[in-house]
View 1 (cartoon, rainbow, N blue to C red):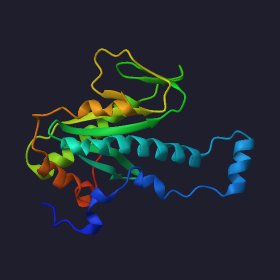
View 2: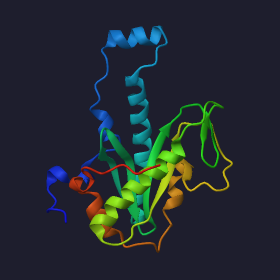
View 3: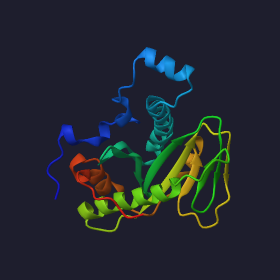
Length: 209
């Protein structure tokens, strides 16, 4: 059973990309040198991740008028978090944001390729994340809480989904509004009350993938 919710434990105040806002990157000189030498920089990855989460978060926040609740940057421990959690009459969706500006993305049944590059385990990791979320919510709600994984690609020039058995929803950022009319799955208030409580997510064991 969770303790009474306090302001310090209320995740509903988190902004999109909250966990990335506090990342400290290198100074200006180091950034310029890295750019001149074309060296990949971790801070650049953080910046792109923050941009993606902010853009998707803004789209998800618009679903509030349709009865949905949104939480951002839910900590799972070990510097891992859920980018966004969408909770409403149509169910619970664990949303993973991927920023690939001006890139083409191909999605198969269990792999994702960016500009025909090496397969990325986005779908597998999204499914594992959704399972972890479901375990937490069911533990404190006391009833089954199905959680669907969602991948949202930001800034891509083309998104081609050729999968026939993919168990992950795939959208571009402006397409997440397709979730708005879903209904009839659950009464969301109790689930939202658990999900917004920081202590529910402490020491969450990983799910096998």
